[in-house]
Length: 425
Image (cartoon, rainbow, N blue to C red; front, side):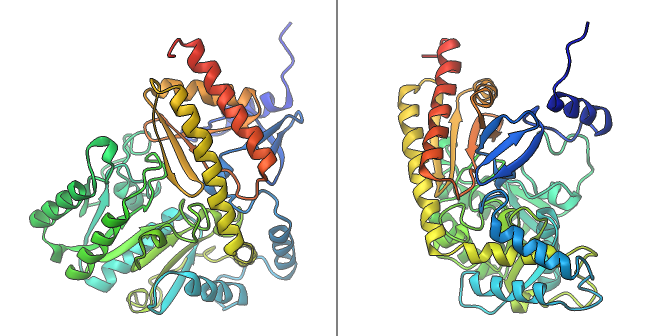
């Protein structure tokens, strides 16, 4: 007689039968509810969430202030389309983001729905402003799954597969990562060599993640970002900071480029902008943002009023105390990770990151795959990055110290069980 499936197992089975296999899934569980930094499956099992919807839930699951804002706006109107009529939440959010973007230059903001839309529209705006076609991106970078965004993405597997041919006039250069022998000076020299071949007059934009997300949580050195700013200014190239994963407190500041004390020409932000609602912002210098003619930008759902209301409530939460808490969480996680790394030096290559955006790199992706399973069995949800050999931390920044300590203990126990059982020690 076949075993009776649990409700979670049944939903996972239905998913496999009805959803294309190309939509991957890290954990074979089905969630019933979530709050703060915890989620519960359909059987009532509790997990501490170190994934946060892949960096979306900085303000925590079901944050009451955000839930209330969503409900209040939904009771007024859920959709109008900003290309048809104006409405307060879009304009108010644009004003708030313009004020929070680093740098003294006057800003304007375009609202969209996804990070991929954001990176593509940022390039459209840069091309309209410069009259040039070329774009430079970085190896191991990730900018989205739509065709231009996928072309700019410098991480081949699993994203590019057989989806080509890709867009023209997109070039890649090494991302600075001293662990791989590419320090800031080497990366800058490679970029300058590329510009000798392509010529700066062909390049509209350079797009970079200040901290690689999918690429393994590698932070670009501040001196490299400052050099990038100088190079772009010299050649009239638009500097685009892809802050989709790094933004809104994850690194201890609203935007990660603030650590380098530079002003990007355009910032693309999404994920934690709206507390779980689909929303993206392209924030840029007003002169650049005004380059496209009316009708050149927009989208039917872009800047949805309910999502805008959620974002306004989210921004209210992200004050100086919130940023300080992100830094404190990051320090606590890093300290715990470094102790673990010392104990398992043969298997753990590096601990790195900024603020609460911390990654642990392993010598083998196989270790990470098994640790993710072991952690789930102990009630902790993890997710890999890089080449499957990095565990990344995207825990909601509302977690308290007690739950964080529980999570870190579960993390350490999971690593211990996997590495000791494999005989790595």
